[in-house]
Image (cartoon, rainbow, N blue to C red):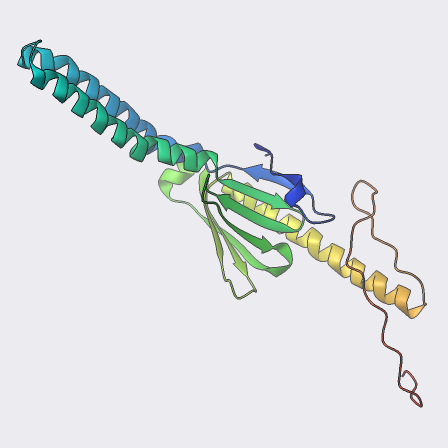
Length: 219
């Protein structure tokens, strides 16, 4: 499901990209429609001007420039902007969080840690079912609430993958907590857990417990 390269330097220690997505191509349906309409109308109108006006008239040249400027403005607003928005929108799913990035010059983003995920839902209309896409809704336990990701390709499969990543992240955190607790009880130095490639995972360093005041003993 990988379709683009998210910079690895922006990932945390031990974080790995599982898959990346762009919005479904249906997002370009109306921009392409407007492209064809604007180019067609502009070309037709400019070709007919010579039959409506004299070839040597000043009005003919002015009208041609006016039509070209209006068509260019409409193309930028109705085609170029949505195309750039589609190209610069990223849905990145790692083993730690869900990342959404949008924008080219003015960038916006939102992340949701998998550890905060409470529920993952999806919905799609009849039109979206025909194109196999939909809206992914991820409920969070944090104060930021729900993360809504629109125009997700294969949204049902993505929902299952988010659940799988959440379960794996939860299992990893539980195993790490149990391992640390057992090692601290025996006075051992905590050893890092291994990832799926057999490499040590980076985990936060847990400081040792403070010494007890004189005259007190641990229970």
